[in-house]
Length: 476
Image (cartoon, rainbow, N blue to C red; front, side, top):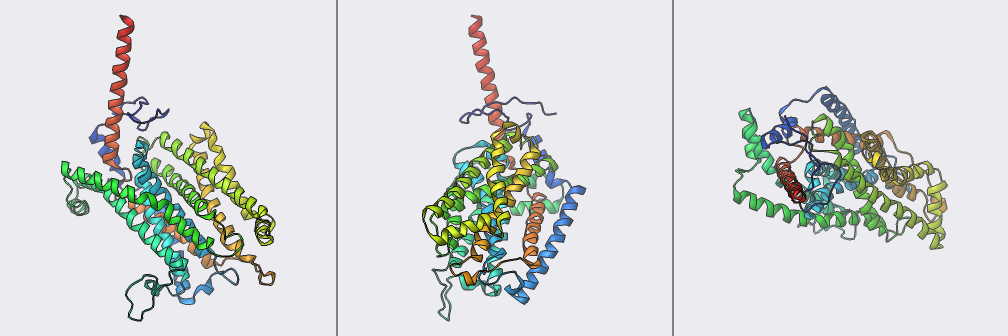
């Protein structure tokens, strides 16, 4: 049985009030507990979620088929609201994918040990969020089977992409981000896939995990090259946090539309992307730690740290909201003032104020230590932030397009069942892929958790030695 371990500081780490690991575990105990989600069949709750996700995926497939056969006219888009749910969902999903790079790459470079228990879930979330995001610009093309026209391939017709088009930039951003994120995720998996291979009872599983781990033997040479490659990919992935969503913000900032043509959009979008990604990590992490029996490695220290980051990024987003409304007023531009006045008092004002409530007021709860450690409050707050970030994109994209410089061209907007099917279906597909993945690969890195346990043990031994020395000195 594992014995409770005190909250001991790790050398090189700031003092924390909460332990990063609960209990003292041997390497064998950690391997067994972290492979539990892979070795055991899911319970009733797991299969109920899978069935619910499959139903949503069915709705999604119907919506995609209707979109391909009928065209974009099946959506609620009109003139002048040519961009709506398709681009809203794209920006929302690509933003969610940013937390994986933040937690995995940046915190790795900063040598923050608390990342080791949550980085796998964050990286998995990133991959599937980017996949969901990539679908919407392709569907918005109208003829998605010609998606390769966006790539600068050597065409015999000498028809090259329009490099001044934001669509081409989005393709470059998505493919680069997905490629680097996948390599980073897979490289981090290699030692754990080897552990799953060695612990597998079925010859078939042992063969598949052996193939996936690429012959990993755990030799000193393997560990050396693994660490070097992991750090190099972390350094390569870090600039993507800024560059990818900066490119996404250029979709709007390069236009002349009031409310879009603003230099604040790049940093504003980057902060909002990390904010929404952290909220999605908490939304997935809190149920997973309970259902997958990971409470001993995903502790309240990790939840507390994520809540603090959510508070910081939420405050940045709140400042951006205040700044853009102030600049619109300070510019003395009639069109700029009109669009922001429409946000606050127009027909879509409830969605704007919902955005303010979810993204500005809700994160302020985390100033309280007690609320940061209340799992129900944290999960509901994270869910509300996800809702708020989607409604923010709705206000920026759909509501801005309803009011152009020409009043005679003003129009309303209402989504169709196909729009709702694509949104809810993409969430269902994302959930289904996540559920399948946590049953195939360990959701928490085994090797990094073992290393963290050794550091905790060394720190405890050091503290005991210091206390013994002080006690001996006082006796003398």
